[in-house]
Image 1: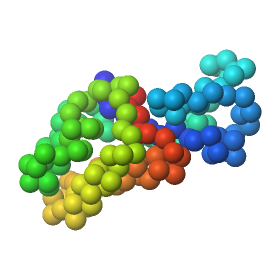
Image 2 (image 1 turned 180 degrees about the vertical axis):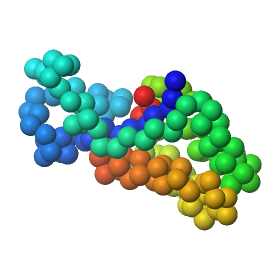
Image 3 (image 1 turned 60 degrees about the horizontal axis):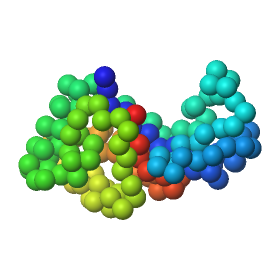
Length: 140
């Protein structure tokens, strides 16, 4: 098991970047659900804007400890929303929490903890994609 987060492309991006003409949009995740395609003929990567794999349960626990150290053990949105489990598929983070997440990402990026550099970059990438696409961050 591992933890992966992604942002689905929004309708304008899908219409502009793919040949899909007939599709629905899942109201919870923003996932594009094409009509007239079989699973074997459809490339799901065409409707994913950004994907980040955080790793297996051990790696997520390792990242969680780094974040705790860098944030000086403060109660953290990153821990509560992302790092609480190494396998929480089906969860999502809506846009109303992005500001709080970016505030913690800013702190991590300035941290003197060397291991705390790639994780905040990945989170920033997800948040920027979610804002651009108008969709939540989804865990799969």
